[in-house]
Structures are given as C-alpha cells and as structure tokens.
Image 1: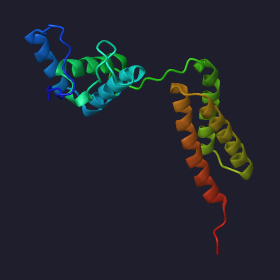
Image 2 (image 1 turned 180 degrees about the horizontal axis):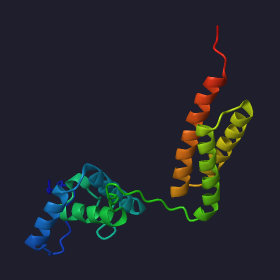
Image 3 (image 1 turned 180 degrees about the vertical axis):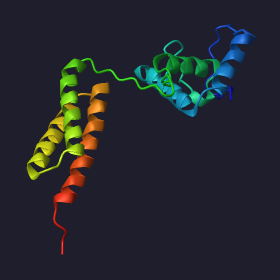
Image 4 (image 1 turned 30 degrees about the vertical axis):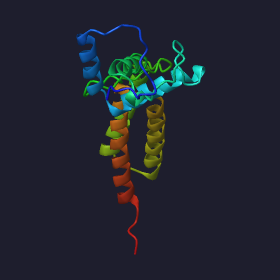
Amino acid sequence: MSVLPSSTPPPSTGYTPPLELLQAADDMLLGASPGELADAARGYVAHGRPTGGHSAITGAELPDFDVCRPLVRAGWLAVVRELCPPPKEPSKGTITVHVPELKVDVSDLKPELERLEGLVNQLTTAPVSMSDLCHGARALAEASTLLSTSDSDASRAVAALVQDMAKCLSAQVRELTPPQP
C-alpha cells in the first residue's frame, strides 16, 4: 500500500517521519469512508493539474494516489475532512425551522377562534336549515384561509375546529338531503 513505483523515486530530503505520525496516518486511512478516500484522491489529482501532473518541488511525475505513501494520502484526507466536515446528526424528536420572514401574532387569531367555536356549538345543537349550512360552509372556508397563513398552536386549534365543523356539516347535509330512489 505504501510502495512507490520504481519510476518515481521518493525525493531525497533525508526526512524520516516519526513512527507515531506514520501510525496516525495509517489509523486515519483505516477509519476513512470510501467517499472520503475518493474525495481525497480527487483533491490530490486536482493539485497536480497546474504542474501537468508533476511535482512542483522535484519536477518528477506524480504517482497515482493509491500508491502514494500513507502520510501523503492521510494529508489529503485531512484536507477533505477540513473542507467538507460530515453533516451533524439532528437530535431525534427535534425539528428546526428557520423562517425569519414569517411573523404571526396569535392574539389576532383568538377572536376568530372564539367565533368559530360558537359556530361549531350552533351547528351541533340548533335545528339546521340550508341557510345555516351555507353560513357554516362560509365559516369553514374562512377557517381554511386562516390555516393556510399561519403555523402556530392557534392554527392547530383552528384546524381541529375546521375538522369538527366539516363533520357536522356533512352529517347535517345527509340529514337534509332526500334519499335517492
């Protein structure tokens, strides 16, 4: 894995890396994902493009990434990890939403919520005419409009009311509709 091809002798710098650096490089490479290694290889190839695939120091042809010394490959892996850190895992059960332009004043919804609760009570207790059903349908449409413009606790309460109203209206329409022959 760390053998250089015979056509590319290592530069004679006289430098021998300490054993702990070599071991750390091996450990880093063993812990790398295939995607990280592929990105490291891409970076290595890209760094050689300006020099036509030759070393900028010695002029020697650069070896393929896979035959580079582990310390070189670990260096390119470190570059990948620095520039492209893995995404952080979101906490389970947590939803994070950033919507700075959405501002809802829940106090504006409270009178509408109370009005709709009154309508639900009317629909469930009073005798119903077709006119009442039309008023209920209108209130249902208004509630739907409110729901589409807000995402808050109040809108969830309105959503529950809309569902209740829809059920009540549906039941009352069935009662008022003559049976089909």
